[in-house]
Length: 313
Image 1 (cartoon, rainbow, N blue to C red):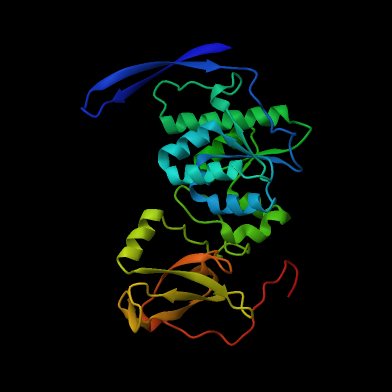
Image 2 (cartoon, one colour):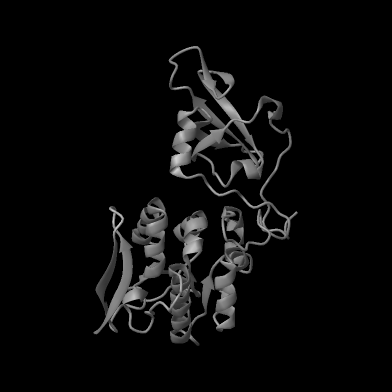
């Protein structure tokens, strides 16, 4: 076991600046693969950007067994916890779920992957470098056995990884290049610091990319202010791009209610039309709906729209 010292400056609530020195122990006997070994296929190392902006994609693909051998670094966990606690808690539940193949690797306590910050290096740059170091280590250890890919939407991190000989890809590049993941392209969201090309249902450049889901606080504020309503989505059996949301006005036991500026019956059905407006929601999902201005309302389409597998139609 090796001991190092971590030194950092901390500002107290009273405005005092203190220098903190902590012991940091490094080990060489940390678990470097899941209990029972790796599953089928390649390993992927994801960075913090992917968790913060593409958690829906990770959730759906890992729950269905589409993605296996997903390596979650301690560096990433720590950054996510610091940035968005609710995402950290959601990711932790995903890791603990039976049947999912997400492996947490304590790279910050492993002698071969721990790094110290360089003089003048920002915490973010140091963490990106730690992620690349861990990805490079796995790539070296598993060479000849299975491929290891660093998945990142951070342009600078991806470029530096390429320069260092680390196989890397954006989330969109990764999913589109693998047939087993192509049907999940519509769960890829746009977000800050992304380098996603194309999107939508997986066509060429110019396809729409779904907007990022709102935060829990934004949703609560919108519902309280009457801008959003809550209901259950029922997809149209004859049209894969339309659904209806049954909304009940809980503030009224009888008579008319109010949704934003619009008067509605105590129970009403709201039409949601188009892939972009559906925003990755699926049949029987509990959803939040923002009612459009009345001049943008439309009726249901009278055509049948089916989902086609690649190569059909």
